[in-house]
Image (cartoon, rainbow over all chains, first blue to last red):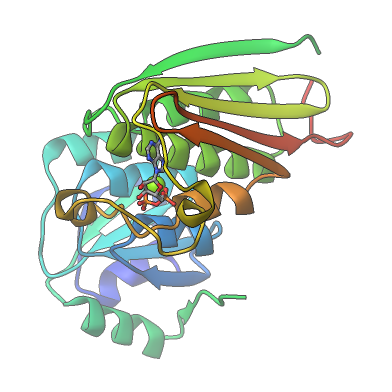
Length: 116
Length: 146
Ligand SMILES: Nc1ncnc2c1ncn2[C@@H]1O[C@H](COP(=O)(O)OP(=O)(O)O)[C@@H](O)[C@H]1O
Ligand SMILES: [Mg+2]
């Protein structure tokens, strides 16, 4: 699914990453535990999270993720948007909860990461 | 390729700058043209080690060494050390505070992640001398960059 489709499905606001909208994500992973993200997620994966601190962007950077969705309408600070812009990571903001956002994306064909 | 060594200071409780060292490590490896899956492993392991210094220690250093066959991350801190290393290595074991958990860390997966991302992991620690961690990832021909 393209990041612009994610934006549409979740009726999300794009906080940064205009030039990344045409990029594809193949899977999605929802978590507030950054070490779980680092353990299970590999490239081209969309991260959904309820956390809005710097470490979310750092985690995405280390795991080579290109987009993060902040759920429940929790908006990150300007410093976080700045860091994501520097690291070429798209940030999206949706009013949906984690459950609803995940359900919408899944039913539109975006699968979860498989854990082996 | 000549051996390369970088040393970075990591402060305790500095949650704003936490991750900067691993970010620098990642940038250095990219510029050397190292294989991207190797960079990802090293970056994740370095980041977990860096976060542990920030969260659990009184401060320390991260050292990056690049040699023809191996990339090595060494994380040294000044204490307080880990009383039971075997226990600390278990998935899910954590002594992190609620404040740290609210930031997304403290799931007890950091040391297991370092293990998963490395070819060799050495952890030595004692109360008093601090914690010393060595993370090694092997570089095969074709992954080394120029
Ligand atoms: N550098 C360190 N100094 C002191 N204690 C540490 C250090 N690194 C890890 N520990 C101890 O080992 C435990 C497990 O570490 P880790 O697997 O990274 O999980 P987490 O950081 O989520 O707690 C920590 O909760 C802490 O008690
Ligand atoms: Mg940890």
